Length: 258
Image (cartoon, rainbow, N blue to C red; front, side, top):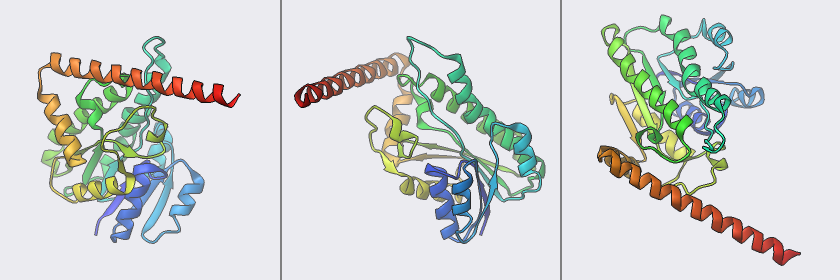
């Protein structure tokens, strides 16, 4: 059984993966910021915890200095959506700090102690494959993460360190619960964790899930850019229309209740 370190393990997909891996007999190092949740996870068999904020390079390095693992799953991240009528540079920075620089901080702390046979797993997103509306910050950060993963795979090959990227679709988590748009083929975090664990324990360089949704997105990614753009503009308009109808519906309810 493997010793697996998981960042972002105090909620959502990371928590589900930590619990599933531990239930399957793997030794899990659950990392996160939420002290109460970490204390709860520490009560589970096969789970030890490590508290730090991936955005803080110094605390990350200090927390991971003596940690040894076979597999590091770099899962911690966030998502915020862009309002193009009011672009906020600070919001872009928040997203990139968590999704890109947070991953780099963890990677920088762990890699010096990695050896042949160890594996680094980057959790990006299928959102990186198409120009989805309002996803400028999130999609760009996940595209950057995938590029980092693939170049690290090249540069770590001669050391025998394996690198893998995992690209999920829509997963029901506290983060996606905030979304105000339809999420096709949404799966539970428990289902996603099973896809992830199966992928992590495989020799595949890239993992995509859920299968049908990822196949559709990957096919659309192969189409000419003008077709991709037309599709995404159409999806944006559908989302705008749906939001308008929902607003009208809520206003009608309020009027009726007066």
